[in-house]
Length: 162
Image (tube, rainbow, N blue to C red):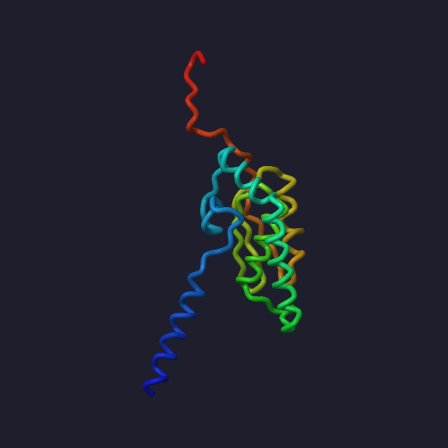
C-alpha cells in the first residue's frame, strides 16, 4: 500500500501537467491561446518571424519533426487516432514553414483544430485549412485567424517638419 500511494499521486500530477499545456504557436509573438485578441505585428517583428521561418535550418527542423512523428505513428499503427499534442505540433510546423510572417496558435481536441492569430495576406489565410488537412489525423479545421499586415514600428521618432 505504501508503494501504491506515490504511484497514484504521480499519475495525478502527470495528467494535470498534460491538461495545462498551452497550444502550439508559430512564433513567440503569436497569441497564447485561440481565444486571445489578436493584433497586427510590427514590421520588425514580422520580418524577424519571416526570417526565422524561411531559414533552411528551420525548414529542415520542421520537416524532420513531421517526418519523425509520421514514421512513429505508422510504426505504432496510430494513423487513425493521433494525440492532440502531436497534431498541434505538426500543424504548427507545417504552417510555420509555409506561411512566413504568420503569428498563429494551433489548438487540437480529438482531431478538431482551431487556428487563431494573424497572417499578413488573404492568400495565406486561405492556405491554412489545406495545409492543416495534409497532416494525418486532422478531422476538421476551424480558422479564427485574421489578415493583419505588419504595422510600422510605433517607436520611430517622426517629428513634424522632418
